[in-house]
Length: 304
Image 1 (cartoon, rainbow, N blue to C red):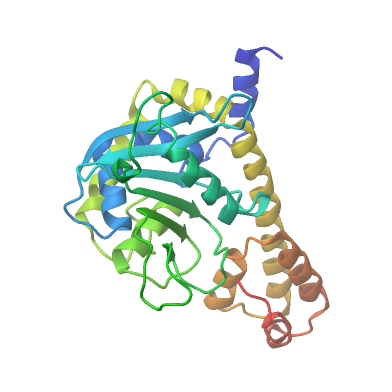
Image 2 (cartoon, rainbow, N blue to C red):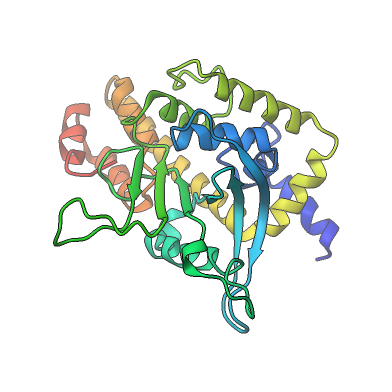
């Protein structure tokens, strides 16, 4: 299959009424190349209203030593404090170990700084922040944000201060700063009419304006195809998997509705569950349950 027919097949695989959200790889990259959009996003995530970026790059390739694995950074930036920040939209969290991937990425972020043949002193290494945004709460502690820094196990409060920070965000938990929850829910369903947006933050409004400008631009179709081509494995496989999950969730709700009235809380719990194995288990339980209460009782041990 040639390049043009491949791109056409990818686009035709999407439903006619498909709406791209910021959680989609293609739109995320297209929007984050806009410095203002990325500033607004990082300002909310890092809780720094005055954050300003000096440089932004999307899909930056960082090469390792010859013959070793390289990485492609989704959205890289350097701010006025010379911090190097990388944000990854990582919806296929179940396909890999994000904890160890963050370790690998953090190490390679220093590679361009420590160029061969130059006497770069370690004290001049910039601070680095790695941010992973996922749909699922991979730590299952019901927090929208998890921040990790190096610190001593023997001496409480003693931090290594090596300038590294790893942040994991998810769109499942509602526990966190209101503006952060609103941003994550906006990424999941990218419209200001989204009822899950709980604060009227001007940074999200600005971000939405840029999103709409990107979607209406003449370059969007070409950009969309190019990004989908680059991210075909990352995007299409994820889409297929999400489609399967959504189908299971719909079947569960259909079975339960034959039994009785499904509460909005239970409906949301089912729709927010993205673990395919748990959904399969719930589907079997829904088929056997004689009442809604019995189903809720039997799924209680399972975490969303």
